[in-house]
Structures are given as C-alpha cells and as structure tokens.
Amino acid sequence: MLALLRAKRTDAQVSQVELARRLEWTQADVSKCETGVRRLDVIELRIWLKALGYELADFVQALDNSVPLLPDQARNSPAAAQ
Image 1: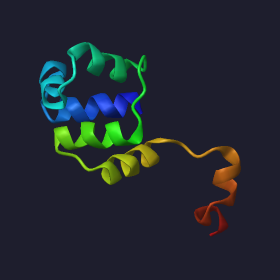
Image 2 (image 1 turned 90 degrees about the vertical axis):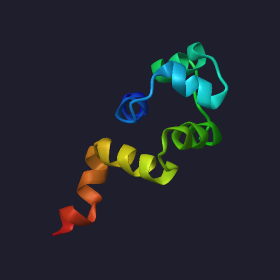
Image 3 (image 1 turned 135 degrees about the vertical axis):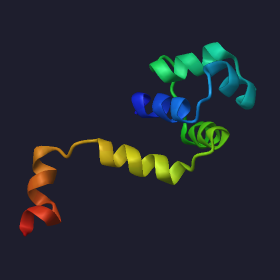
Image 4 (image 1 turned 60 degrees about the vertical axis):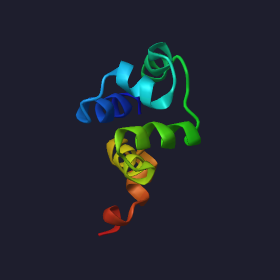
C-alpha cells in the first residue's frame, strides 16, 4: 500500500512539500505516512487522495489488483472453477 501511495503522489507530480501544503500538514507527516511510521485512517486516506486528484474507490481497486491471492483464495476463485 505504501508503494502505491507514493506512486500516486509521484504520478501526480506532487512533492511531499506540496502535498503537505495542500493537506495543511508538515512534510515530516507526509514522509511518516509514506514510510509506514504513521498510519492513515480511511478518512485521512480519502483526503490525501483527493488532494492529489484521485478517488478512494480507484485507489482501493488498484490496491486490490496489486495484492496476490492467498493459495486458498486462488483455489476457490470463480476463475479456478472454469
């Protein structure tokens, strides 16, 4: 998730300093979130993404697509039944 969070910021060509300004946070707070020192709750994540021009639902979908299935989930998936 952290890599995707950083990627969204860099894809938007926004620095940590600029994102911090938009959020009215410090650059250190942005850095702590991107490195996992500080966790974002879902409300903060939505605000973060909006500040970058992204929607929470799109981020969650991208995150879901990037996480591999566990072996049991892969066996029970609809695709495995075909």
